[in-house]
Length: 78
Image 1 (cartoon, one colour):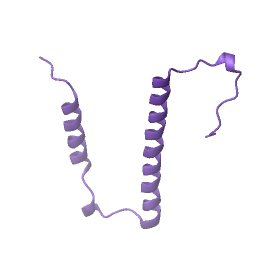
Image 2 (cartoon, one colour):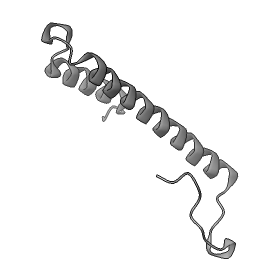
Image 3 (tube, rainbow, N blue to C red):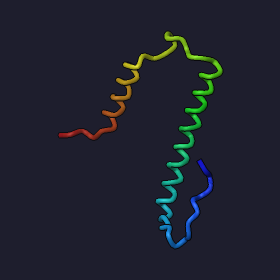
Image 4 (spheres, rainbow, N blue to C red):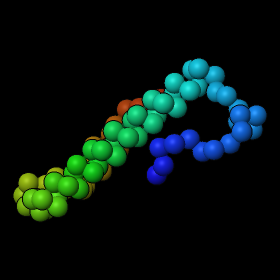
């Protein structure tokens, strides 16, 4: 992906409000950090291979933990 902004004349672009621009920059930073973390995991797998099954968490446990987090985030319905 290109790091340079897309070329366009200034009249064709709508300037964001400062708060919106800050939110977009924060989202970009989080996305970049997540991509860096994912790349590091893949590099570790390439270097060291897959972990043994005994060292891994079963997907069912991961799913249940994630569903529990989602339920906790959701407001209660009366």
